Length: 273
Image 1: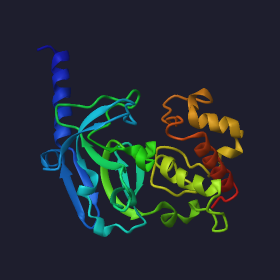
Image 2 (image 1 turned 45 degrees about the vertical axis):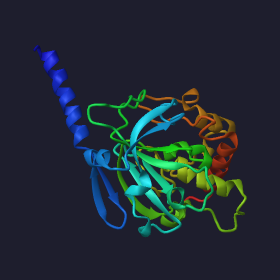
Image 3 (image 1 turned 30 degrees about the horizontal axis):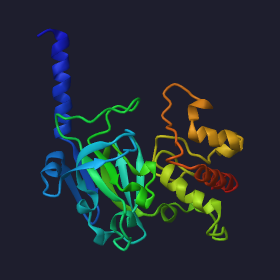
Image 4 (image 1 turned 180 degrees about the vertical axis):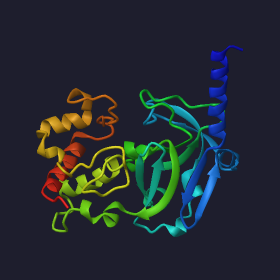
């Protein structure tokens, strides 16, 4: 075996070893750790079909377990959230009601934890590499209006937390803002779609992108039409080496959604805290 072949074999063995050793930490009413092997051996593990997977933009098949089966709903308040972190610094917050509100009439979205089997790596994402070992996917996602950032991958931990505005009052709009205001709707969209990577007024768990209000807010240096286009297709406006920002097409954020987010950003530009 020549040196090149030996290195390739060593790399393959290391990749398989890492997949076998993958752990998922769950901290809801007590900390537990699940390994890849334990999850794949569960009696509720199933092969599921996910049409129009958000990450791969095609139908995908996964070995997965129902996400709610791994969590203890008794320790989640009705207005609580699940904080899901990834090894790449991505942080997603899912309202607990998306998983545990059984009052909603079917069809309704169902969350699954997809598990990358050892020796059977998933497809790689262009520019993003491997997305394993764990990935939160949805069936019937449209029924509950699941957003693109609510499909986190490279997952390594899940824990219970309060909803974003309760944890970080500095991202919340004033009580006087009407419930039907685009600004208030924009706040909810910002928490779901942007706080996975960015902070607001120093608040947030994510570390991939810059704070979007401090020292300056995008509405202070982008014209509205430019900012809207930047959100849809960032590289058509500005690109740089090592750029990690991904775009939101209209299936992820409609034009109305983007208008609401921009309304919220404009509001927060006047409320730096």
